Length: 139
Image (cartoon, rainbow, N blue to C red; front, side):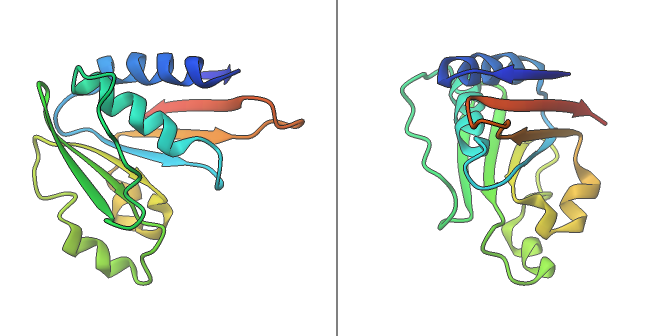
């Protein structure tokens, strides 16, 4: 699936749509440059999974992993941007719970996470900078 997300409302709507398709055990990687909308889309997915549109969903850039309890089970939101060595990902426990839905930004820093992904979401800023282009692939 590929589409243009013209604004934040479209990003939130896509997040809700994607959340409905996720199941325990899914590992979702979000790819794209800085500012492409990875965290915004992850927030929309998490808020939908939690049934709480006002849920505070901070960026996991400094904490590395933010956990959430949702009606669909545990959700982990990770950001690997600050990892120096791919082996550091083992300490985060992203693959430890087979019932968790895991969302990972900057997954390319860990080949192990990329290989385990069941969904790949790629976001890009289109020429002209308006909106976001998104493609979603299920493996």
